[in-house]
Length: 350
Image (cartoon, rainbow, N blue to C red; front, side, top):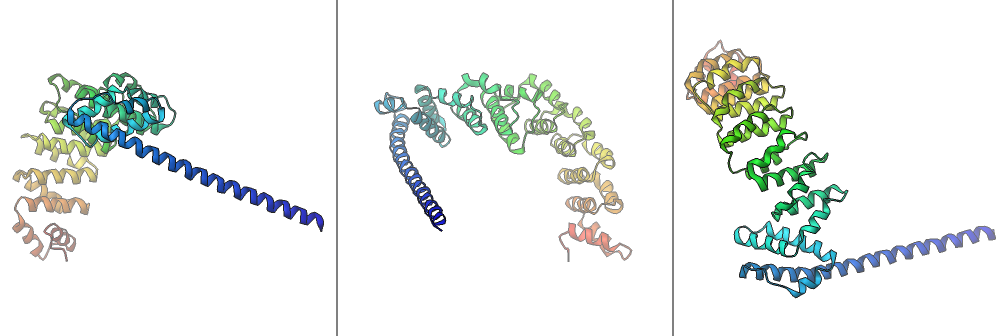
């Protein structure tokens, strides 16, 4: 009995000690958290004043408070973070001044240090910071991450290349293995201002990439800059193994439309998967070429896929042939399915 009581007392004491330690840990965490936020508020005020004064005057003057605080690594990391956030909110002269502050206090050292870390978010963050601050001297170090295994990292490295070098920065596409997301493609496209006259050969080579996302990006690039001389090479891509590449090719052919486009789309139609066929009909609808009338009626009456027939009816309607469609629905020999499809296209579905 006494042994059991002794064990119970010891257990109770241990629990009290554990609870006391937990309470102490929470108090210490709260204390240091409070100290950190208090310190961050003071730092933020000093940095804010420096940024405002520099933007107003257009010059980066010596600041004793920042010079003193810059001896602390924690302040320098916080300073870098605040400058990058500020740069994202300003453009023109103000953005230029913020980048000069970054350069004046040599904060590229902190950003470059992140590239040596193992944590992916730190590496990506370092690349983002160097890119935002236009630290072009860091480009050789950033280039080492172009074929990194992490999309988070290699996409930032790709964006940095194009931000600094424009179209020339896209040369990484020749060896890119990772997938370019739609968002990444949009970022890259927005960073390219023009394609030089001698750049079309590079564009042609990217169309032959084994990376489908590279081909899709290249097609979007061709559309954006209307690279008409590449039109013949696009026809080969209508046989690409990726349906998404074929769909983007159809859209690009329409963007570069010439006298043969309609015939080429009609000729390839039956050899395409249904998703691509639907896109071809969408394109024919946009083209608004009356010469497509017979082809569209053929698909409306004879195709096996309802989705394709609906698109054909919509394209016919867009050509101003609502009367012809109405005549078909009024014919007593017309099937209920076809009537339903046409009414759907005419937005009269019941």
